[in-house]
Image (cartoon, rainbow, N blue to C red):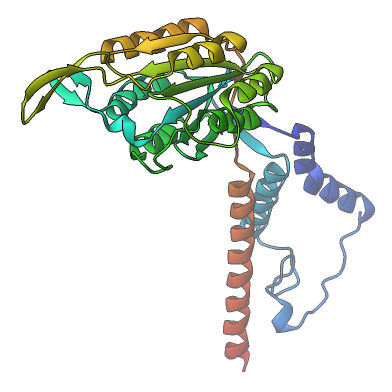
Length: 334
């Protein structure tokens, strides 16, 4: 749909007509013909014999004027109504990438994958389904760091998640520091929308901030923390002396993760397999629904530049034509 930002300016299109009527009213008697120099004969409004400008030239000038007036009125193309992405949550994903995440105790399509690969597989779908949320990505090991700030650009966040490698943040696990950094990024966001999902397969073994102190800070800042402990509880390990059953998640501190979740109003989940991990993120989807406010907007494309450009182009072409005609006449008189 075409509209104008300043439609009242279109009235200026009638100014040439009003000027012509006023000139006729002020000059009832025809003025005598005044001889003019040959180099002035082709300027606008003057001809070789001193007569008025030819009709075609006046029409061209009028067209340029109308285009300029339309440009001043700012024509706009208003597009179809588009849903405005309104965040329901500011959701930060904290993923453990310490070397223990390399344990291959997850199974997908009858083949073993490591824990980080399983997390990437599930989180890709989770992020894609959180349309309307600002999502950020925090990776941690010995040191935590923000891999992607809170953003609506979910495609980039998924790409950065898939590029994360085991051991990039060190060989230990600093759960307290990871929570502290997450709170720092979330505390300035709107109340009741600050959510942290922390996934780890171990216990706190590094960092300057203890998990309990970090939990107190998170609770005071209104950050809800959902903790996910990942890792199978039973796995057959083959060795030189035969096979034996082990618990690959013996280092997982479930009590700590439960305490963190309870004190911040979140919930602790245990993911022993890939299907359980998928169910956990589905549960979080239910616990943290996306509350869109239904805002809409219509995109507006400015069109004035095309009309202004056309007016300028017509004027320049006409002036160039007049200049060439004047030069040809100069040569003919010379």
